[in-house]
Length: 272
Image (cartoon, rainbow, N blue to C red; front, side, top):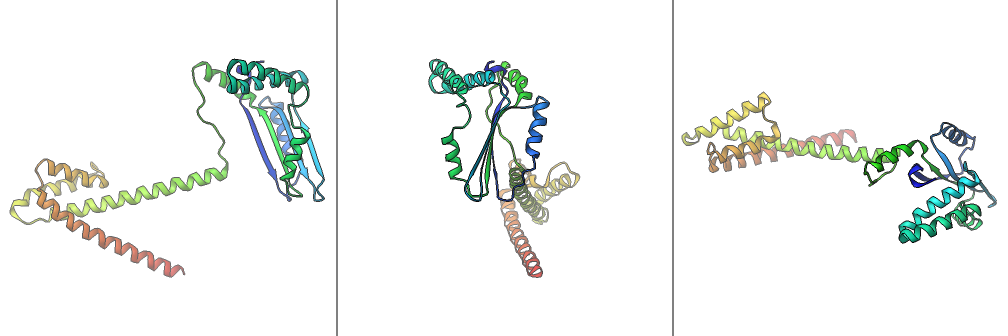
C-alpha cells in the first residue's frame, strides 16, 4: 500500500446533545457505504457521558491488523515528510507502523479522558476517520496529470444558506447601483434633449439619438452615462451642456431618493 493508492482521508467529528436518539441509523448508513465500496473506516470512536458522569467509549475499524499497520506507516510517513523531509518520512513510517501494531493508532485512555472532560452530562461525541475509496482513482488521475489540491471542503446547508444570503445581498446592491446609474443617465439624457439654445441643438439631437438606441435595446440603461461621455469626447455635446444636464440630473436624483424614502416610511408605518 502506498499514498497513490489511498483515497482522500477525512476526519469527521459530530456532537450529540441530550435529546439525541440512537436508533442505529448512523451505523446502518456506514455499513451500507462500506459494503458498496465507497468508504473504508480507518477508525471510529464514540464517547458518551451519562447523566451520572459515567463514560461509555466505543471503537471500531474496517481495517485488519496488517492493514492498520500499513495505513499507520503511510500516514505516519506523510506526517513525517511534512516535518522533516525524507528522513522524517522514514521515521514517521516506522512510528506509524509501530503505533498501529500496538493499537495506539486509535485513541488512548488519556485521549478519551481529555474529550470527556469537555462533555456535558448526557452528551456525546463521535469521531470518524475514513477513506473515500471511491475517489482513489480520481485522486491518482488528478495527481498524475500534474494537479495539486488547493482547497477542499464540504458546504453544510447552514453554510449554503449564509452564502445564499450574501449572494442575494450582493445582487441587490448591484441592482440598486445599476438602477441608480440608469436613473442618472436617463435624467441627463432628458436634460440634454430639451436644450433649446441654438448652439446646443446638436447636443439635443445626439441625446435623442442615444435615447432611441437605449429604447431599441442596443445600449443598456446603466451604460447611458458612459455613452454620453463618448459623445462629449466626439464633440457632439459640449462641456457646458453636459454640466447643466448633470445639475438637472442631480436634482432629479435627489427628488427620486426623497420619494423612495417617503414610500418606505409609509410602508413601515402601515406594517406597524
